Length: 406
Image (tube, rainbow, N blue to C red):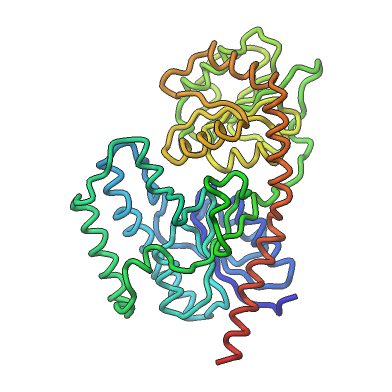
């Protein structure tokens, strides 16, 4: 076992990114390590409950991942993300002044401040990816652009991005670094919170990547139980980023009115259940309910196609129907279709009959269920929080050995 060390985490403070990180933090604390985790106020209590010391970023990262719906937004997004993510530096550097960590662990959304800090402080570092990873054979950025018009490489925002990146490096005494290596990460090591079998071009990723799958969340509890009668259950959510669509939830309720299904809607904090109006007796709407409590009873999970939602379904062996909104959700949905884990619906043309017919067909498809069960085995074999902690300890041990040789 690695001697107790100090690790600093820079996760992106959103549910899809924090949910896989917190079990890893808890596992490291259980092993005796000291963990400092930067976060926003929304997640402070969760970080503390995992045993880490929460520290506020001191800036608003809520728009650091903008919606990208056209080429203009795609061209401007890298510059916007760079400027917003670099705003975390003052708070992190103040913390480093008090105690330099042994390992820096940062979310891929915060790649720029993470890599800059690692280079400036000469720290070993690990990147975390809560979505599909990129290498020389598969590019998330390129895939995003296939869902709209091509981005003009001469767009002024792209030129400004390159200029600002160089300015940030020079401002921190790192002007000798090449922009290409800094932007691509070089030989950077990445932990990916999905199984390799779900990763596009997964067999092309080398030892710079370890696919640990989604760390297991809390075990099911008695907070939700299926009603008596044995009706099949369908869980429906739009996650936390596109859940401000009451009309969609009304359409789902309409789809199953008078049908032999139990429908569980999880709305999030932007739609009041009362706004849906009267619901059929077999439809229940919650602002929040633990998916881990509902999924063991589910026949189908209908969601927006976010990676967190998909991994939840696969952990429990539940077929999925994706209704993607954002480009990354479209990439995830493409994998659902390619592997045969369920179905994909177009948000622009979805109707109540189509939802009902698709849910019924997916629930009855034994081939889909077998493929989902195979992916469930891949998820559990990936190792989750324990393997992630093992990999981080291996990086600590390698850095210590390297230091002893110098």
